[in-house]
Length: 84
Image (tube, rainbow, N blue to C red; front, top):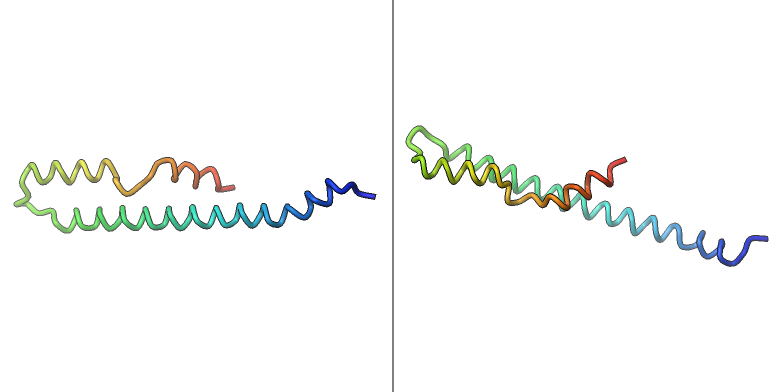
């Protein structure tokens, strides 16, 4: 006959799995939104570039492109760790 502890563990497992799945879904939604913002920023930079762009303007665009301000490294690492 199983102990009451093992029964309690079996009852908690579906809820724990649901919590993990919900957390993973939230991480993926946030990653999608971050990547969409980053892509939009890059698209706007490319559209605004021209031969008449000043060097200061190009410098700012380069900095924004390199910094990727819309991407959170910790969240991206969490997303990568969540992938099987």
